[in-house]
Length: 109
Image (cartoon, rainbow, N blue to C red):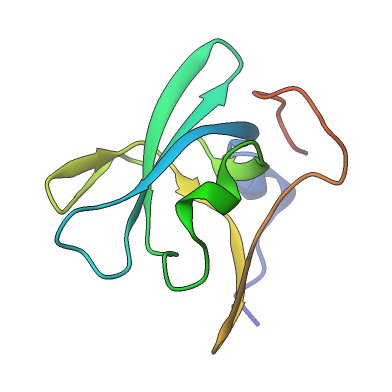
């Protein structure tokens, strides 16, 4: 288990719903996907190392849970503007999604 944090520390993390509108493999990478999501009126690109577990077409249309206020990072020359939340255990990985068709950009608490 990770170190306990306070509610105020948790509130610093901006978790949002994000609808996948485009997804493709990153050229010359074995495990990266370039995922374009819509969060409210904003579009963002998130680069995620989940291609061993998901084909790009499986993610299109899904509403994912993402960390929206993560510092931008460069992966394989691409800027990533967030992080997709996943559950992982060795050979198993599942992206965190909503259980209903919810609007994109909603904040999770």
